[in-house]
Image (cartoon, rainbow, N blue to C red; front, side):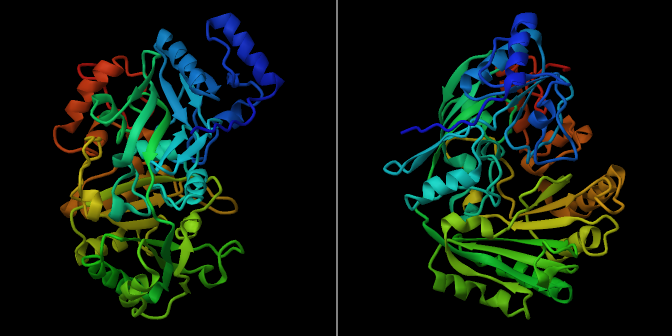
Length: 482
């Protein structure tokens, strides 16, 4: 069933670094490159999609297989060094300073078993590759909006994808995980085991997942795309969408992005230099039903863009059209039990078109299958949330202009969370990007239901008592001050 795909492991400089490291301080020579600061290739090896923060480890191992991961973790464990993991760097939350970074981007194997409707996905595979492999058999994974995001890291965070309201969190549809734990052991864990449930929903807190086996679904095509309204119709469109989401079936997942588009050639002509509300629609039913369902949104008025169509699932990345190039961003979010008009006013009043700190604001409709907890008991909580509000900002000076300081961004995010507090249940740890200085215990606790953090901290004390895996929204082992 399995077919592995690996890229090269680095040039002669990388090999020499691995050999010298092996002979001078005990790390066995991995197949992939082993680099220290100043080595050729180090900066490229630590770079990722998120550029506002970058890992700066004392040692980086560019793993090509699970054995490389095991060697790296064993080396770190023997010296009590903290461990970070990076596939693509989209979800970087806390940047490593020192310690060991394990890069998994070379571990790209994807294989599909159409009879069991499953896929085995290696640690560095991106969703685009998984979607393509599944689509060849008329199947679809529970992927997110961007084809360049790492599938494993996304799933370990929970995974609110394009088919979320119909099938639920991606984490609830994992059949097995292959993981290297803090003791340097390779393990396979399955639903019903405590480690399995703890790994899913907590990011990289309990080990380095080297591969996962996931469910696929018979969704060969969708009806989807965007309806985009200009600034004069934004408030009306948001209110119609808010009411509309109360009654749509679970086969329809939607969200809205609010942003000012730059006046540059890369932006489609109708959007250049304009503030707009982009409603992203994914309906996994018949196209004619999708057309009927979106009629109330179209009735709002003239659209700047209306590209809803039936499309093969292999083209699902065209719905959100996420940027493919690295960016310096940070993000916050709030999970809401409801979205009354006052909550929409709070969003527009804090991170809307008049905000002194420009933000991309994303409001997603949840509910449906996301409410239902799967039998594996994965650590994805706050399932009663009906919406999630995300704000993304870009600290620092952009090319050719003046930017906003991290302090200004933080203050703006604080205003948003405060304004949404009457309806907030907490937040999703998976959508807290960057700004690791704020990644304290209180913030991590807010990502889980009452009592869940204590349960996870007790498990952490069993599986990672020295808190090696702490470059994340960290769950500290119980009874530790690390």
